[in-house]
Each structure stands twice: as structure tokens, then as C-alpha cells.
Image (cartoon, rainbow, N blue to C red; front, side, top):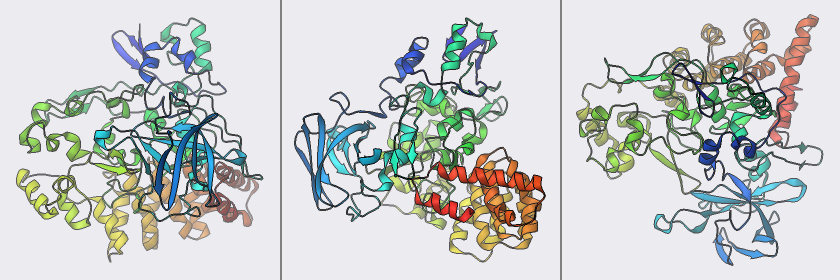
Length: 584
């Protein structure tokens, strides 16, 4: 019996299926998907995925183009309608005013951006955006995305510069089956997509094999997701229930598959592309390199700082380790939350225990009583876009005192000190087990260059109870303080189950002499994770200058060729050419 997209009930058991690699399947389009999956298509229409990008038309343009003017950075821009569509008169790459046609809208809420087509296929994202919130929220106005920056047309963040080129910076995550088709000789693009927005196959993969299978009239028992990567759930027998002993949610068995997380992370992560051809169902490291807890991106304790797009934060959470996935909270087609307010958390965390004044110590119905106020505090990005910290952490004002990091308490009670907040929390929870050591103390010490930091970093990297992203960050920072005694830890971490840690361990070997690199690093040339293999290739590449047996030379040459091919995935970037020079 079919129950929903990718959902089949066999003997009363709900099965959420994933499929084998898609292979040479091609994209069929959301209209074809909707013929069989109408409820899912109806939920998707009008979602932020559906509205991620569109041609500029009266139905899609939200901004005021009735001869509206806006001034920023000494430039007054005018937005108007003309023959053929929507236009802006603003400063171009030479600093002079020019008229540009708006080709596409980009996003919908709380802001909408606009794309202008430049010569050689470059689409540039305008630095002035439309605030699509209501007037009561301060919206319905033009604003600049870098209001506090003194910039001109030479600034790398200026809308005409390479850092604002849609083809590289934005395209992969706002459209379906994007192919950049970049020509390095002419610095030109012939970028294409199968659908302009984030449609069905952006998450489920190309659907032709599935359509062919469905046309054969197969029994669903054969393989209900034939030819697709279905991300509504990961195939295992785990179910959520309340543990009678602790009163907390618990999965009946550990999650064994992370397909859904990898698909979502492709776009909802601070990462860099390392492979041109995305393969559905593969781990994130097959095509992208995740950013670690770097100082300019995260606070020392892992709270969001710069725009990091959720995934790196969620990896730090206890919920991730327990087996929670994106669709436990978010309906994946409409993108709506599964429930509103505290009712969302109450689906797993008993309201009688947690949605009470005894737990949150605030007036019922107030902002302070909201689960997200304490456990998912928000920061603003792109001036007006509030995004929640998905590390789902317990507030630690005591940690803020030591590290100078934000905390949820003084985010709201701005007139108070962190000492006041720490004392209040200690009074509420005098026996709390959540005020012990934190990895943030070690990462902060590494930034400050504390005397004992080397051993603390090594201990953090080796601690399996800590989040993998924090352990990998510690191992990367240990390179600044490396000593021969650390090689024992590094050797063990080269076999860690987390690819972030294996990659950091391989990078550490760059500090060692040739024999150690070979002995410890050679097996990583065949690692299952491409990001790890690329780091191993870079570390071992100098051996191509040595006398090697043919089979080892051929293996290393293949690895170096894969590294070079990875650089061509982002050939429009100067750093990729620098990397090619280094490997040469």
C-alpha cells in the first residue's frame, strides 16, 4: 500500500527507502513527478525552494521598480521599468552609472535579490536587495547588503566583482542540475539548468530510471524508490519513543544511514566545492569540503558567528548524535516546521517536563519561555535575515564569562552581565551536569597560544565523546604546536570513522618526513571519502620525484590527477590555480 512519496507500508511497517546509485539517469522535470506525486508537488509549490530563483516577471518581482531611488556608498541607484522588463541604473565595474536589465529574481523572503547578466555569461548578484517583510516588520524597502562597509567598485564585495558571480557563488543551491560550463581560456560561462528553481530532482536525483520503473507496473515490494535517492528518511528500523526511565526521547536503535543529511548539507552548509559532478546518495565529502570551526566563522564554543548555514552547527549537537535528521523537524516539501512554537519540540520532549516554568523559569507564552530562545538563539545575516543556531546547545553564561562568547540569557537581558546570568542559571540548576569542561575552552586557548595548549588539543582530537567537527578543528590547530609525541595520536585518528578527522590527520602528516608520510598516509589515497583522498594526494605528491615501484607510482599519479581535476571544478577562482601550481 502506497502512503506517500517514497513511503510504503508492508505489514504495518512504514518503510522510508533509499536506492542504488542513479547512474546515467537523466532529469525529467517536476511536472512529470507531479503526475504521480501530487500531494508532495502541491506542498512544494510556493515553498522557498520553489521560489529560489525565477525569471523577472510581474509575478515574481517583489521590489519597487516604479522609479524608486536608493542611495548607498555615495551612489544613488534608480529602479525602473522599461521596454523588455525591469532595470536598474547603478554603478558598474568602472564606477560609472550604467543601465542594467534585471534578468532573474533570487530568493523570496525575507529578502529578494536580483541578477544582472554581464558579458561572457557572468550573472552578477546586485548588492542592493529588496526587504520583502511587511512594513510593520520594517520591510518593503530597498537596502544594501553591506551597509557598514566603505566600498567602491574595486572592492571584492562589490556586486560586479568575481566574489558576487552567481555562476560560482550561488547557482548550485538555487537551481536544479546546474552545469557551469566554465571556459578558463575565455573566462566565460554557458551555464545551464534543468529547472530554474530547487525542484524535486534537486534532492531526489534525476528521475528517468524511476519513471521507467513506474511504467513497468512493478509491485512496490520490489523497490519503491527504484532509481531515486529518497531523502524523507534513512533506511533502518529505528523509531523514536520516550524512554520510561529518563523521560527523554530515545531512538530504538542507532541511525545507520546519513543519506538525507548529506543531501541537505550540500547546500545548507558552509563548504567549498571539490568536484564538478554531484553524485546523489554519496557523503558530503565526495563533492564538497566542510568548513571547520574557524575563528572567523564560529565562536570558540561553536556558536554561529559568520554565515555558516546550519549543518556545521547541527553536527555539534547532541540531537545529531542521537540520530535526529532534518525532516524530523522540517517537512521536506513545503519546508514548513512540523509544528509551531514549543509544540515542535514537544513532539519528542515531554511538554509536561520541559514546557513549564520549572524548566524555563519564564512567564508562560513569553519570548523567554520559547524553546528556541534559549536553545537556538538567532543572529542576523544579510542585514535582516534571522537564522537560528542549530547546535541546539544548553545556555552556558558561565562559559561566556571565560571565553567572551554570546549566550542566550544576555542576548535578551542586554542590560545584565554574564556573571548575573551565570549566577541565575546556577541557582535554577544547582546540580547541573552541563557546566563542566567544554571544547570551546581548548579552542580559545589555541587562539591565545596558552602554554599547555598542545596537549589539550591532542586530548580533544582523540576524545570520541566530543563532536567530530570540534575534534577535527583541534587536530588542525595542533599543527601549530606539533611535536613527534603527537604522531601516536595522529596515527590512530587516520582510521577514525569520521572523515573530517581522517582528513585533518592526513594534513598533519605534511609536517613529517617522507618515511612517516608513506607509512601512515599511503592507505588514505584509497579512502572512501574524496576530501580525504585529496588531502592525502597533496601530502604525498612530492614522492613522485622519488624512485617508486611502478604500481605505487601509478597509484600516486592517479591520486594527483584526481586532485588536479578537483581544482578544475572551481577553475574560475585564482586559488584553484594556485593549488595547481603547488601540486606541480
